[in-house]
Image (tube, each protein chain N blue to C red):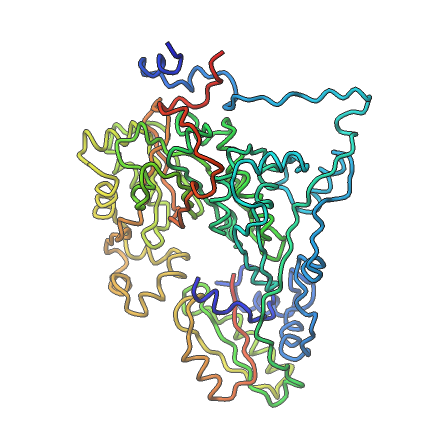
Length: 139
Length: 439
């Protein structure tokens, strides 16, 4: 009787008596006759590295020549979900007030969680002629 | 994913800050702003200003896979070298999981490719890297190379191709310890001698080990472990070594297989992927409480994000639940969990992950979250309100009524059969895989 069938009839999981690894074939060991150890032999291997294509992209809009007189929106995408994660943005706003007082910064909370779109907010920024947007902060 | 694709092709300038940000006092946040971007060592505020003012250049987004990406030429072979040097090269290039690999010689890759009837040049999946705005096209041959590196055999290749076709990484980019699980259903399990019985999750079975390992090597080659670019996990997760790769014990299960629940035919071979962070073992049996009540203790340690949980039951447990407690199907038991497991509303909403991902839904009026959000903190809620999101699979060797409870959510399933070379003989229908051939 086939050993596996016998064990199954006995209700014994064959893995209990399996003494070897779970593959039936073995690869013959190479036995170099040239005196070169396996680790010293020269091998040619295929390259596992991948190629990539840069995505076709919408070009970035031209950058601002200066921040003086500009309006920059600091948008909180509510990473922590607390609705109160604008501490970082408040500190950034304070930094600009101290160091570049001629830039106007406006803090806004995006609706939804960090992956949710908020077209109304983007429209508001565009309608108010915002010059730039800082979106953050995760972590 | 729809939002993700919509924003592809918009090369935003990313700036990394030190972590954590949420909950830190103003003085710390100011130090982040004045301090360095941990990825570039340039000041954060300097990079913010630069992002707004530095003129855009044509070569701004060169990508991480140049120069081949620009020339279109991919060097198919590496320079010949000794095995020791090649092992060191692979490790230093970040192509490994830290362990030595089987070097992908042309002969080994050719042998691996006999495991499929697909052309080596066929594109299996395209991966998009957000930070470099690059598409990686991963071919059948590339998957075969990875399979060789993982120690897989040609008969494993259809499973690897099915996994690769999903494009799902085994280690998603995050500062948290994401982990994934890989489940195989259908005849392929026995054909390639996967383990669904004793020690199925233990490091003992070739197929379970190399298939799980190959998924992580694929993930590495998809760019997900580029340090401080996509790879920020603060502590990491050891599950990533083989991703709990396992076969469901369909032959000994009291219930229908997982892939059949997902509307595949029983005779189809399928891989299913799950994603989460943690799992909890029970240690001994459950004689003082019901199995379900014991599971509640473990579920209480998990977030219950969008009702997702994974219950991995030994066949003894599944049979007990069906024959002694009357749960005729997996969904019956999932419904019981859904209806009976409760937590205080304050405990639920006090979990950062829940607040991050689900509080916005409550704010938008999505039920039942909107109602839950208004409840007093000590009011009990049933967080697993969607029993269909509680995944149940049967794995184990029936030496003890063991189970595992995890927060893994179902991600996707993919057919293995479309990648086969030819139908294989089902040589192990009695669940006795793992034995050497009869002499």
